[in-house]
Length: 188
Image 1 (cartoon, rainbow, N blue to C red):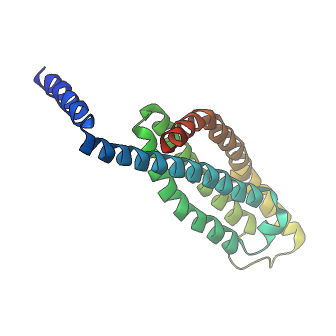
Image 2: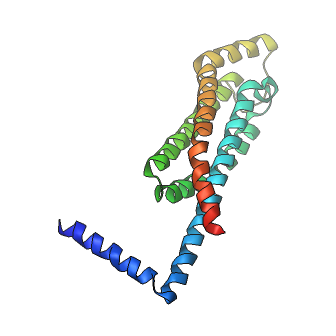
Image 3: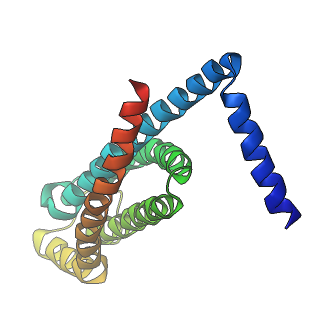
């Protein structure tokens, strides 16, 4: 009970401070900074999520990529994931201030991105056969058998997960867009 009373008193004190001319400008700058951070982090997370999903989607459907050196595909995707990790962390932090439930949904989608990465890597490695990073050195018939086995073990599951991930990302956008609009209004 005392904790609630202290919090209420602190809020009243902060509101009283906010009305003082000297502190009002300070609080306005903080609010604008937070709005800008939210705007940038949400847009960056959303675009990077779609980009990473697209990279893995191409890797799952392009036979030429599978028969070529998969190291370049995985390296490109992993470099994007390094950026994505930071974008996801920033987006969750900024959104949590406004909507904790939406922030947890961002965390779930982020986890799905990493699961898609793992399934895609598993598929690509298995599609290469017994020596995955050596390139295509087997005959066509044997390579087709490796590809089919990889599809059954991980490929179909990864393709389904990619579709589900794209739907999850796009379903979050309307709620995120509301926050973006609020942030844009706060900046102007």
